[in-house]
Length: 441
Image (cartoon, rainbow, N blue to C red; front, top):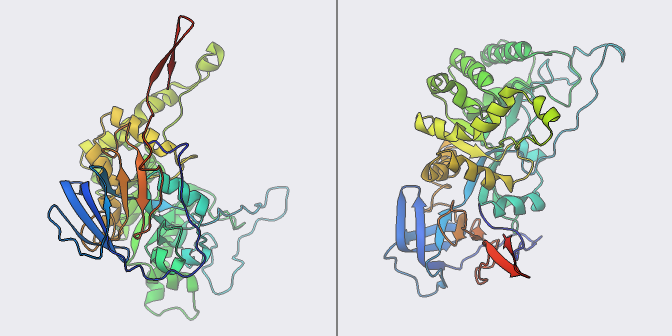
């Protein structure tokens, strides 16, 4: 668990257009985790113009460099969340027609687009995006430097964007990719009253129909222009990410992909451990949430008797999901998706470690795996030469319970999480008063 509370924070506001930063920063005497498998015990890292220009144990430091002595503190790549809605407002649901509230809607309300409004391939996340400084602080404090965000609405959702969490620049600099992936789900759009589909089976049928219609449209057989199908076809070479949210839907999504020759990246539901052999057989890379259930209150015997055994079993077993996936060779990244509080992310990771999850694999799942999913391994996820200068400075090994995150640099800009010059007094203490002993944390 990282310590981030009650700390000095520095998130400067700058409404001006960012100018080029020509200063070379040299971080010396650092323990540098360049990649999950490459560690430099006493190294130097140079950055300029938001990029890493050199890293190693014997780096020649230019005379004009600004030197920052880390005195044995650690450096890690900042984390990447590959499934986010950062900076994009959650859609407000429109009321649907009911048996008593008028006739159901069957036709689309938009001319020139696909006949079903739950298919929204034309959605461009960039047009919906507004940088969220408050949430950026929360993510930076948890170790994240980059998020892959999109409008989480509809069955086919359009494209996402890759955003660096740099509060002191503009979108001209912080948007790393304007079309990072195309997104799908089995869920209807909250913005449409159109009645079909009204079941999971209907959603599956509609997705298949879109693929077939797009193939037909691509052959020039349509007399009319369809902006949705054109966007869908334009996005077909992007990474395809499917929100499944459960093991059974994992299999359903994979089966659709098999039918149309597509290997989806699948957002799982955290219950993959229950059918791990079938999960392995999908050969998919997964995005796994760590939104573990809170412990049930069983202090009241009557209320405790109402809790289903299956719910208790899931609460007990779901923290093992990451270990089981890793043990069986299933590649996956981690996400803050569905967490009510970003601060719960690191707490839940500690719980996963207690269930056997490997810390090196956790680092991979937050750096190199998401970078690889997005095809950005040369830009983010490591501290190698040429990568963006997105890195953490910490007091110790990144996932140790006592480790403090001091700073989170994004695109070469410093964000102070905890003052590096302030002595950490966190810990367990014993207070003796009037012949009584009190434990303080």
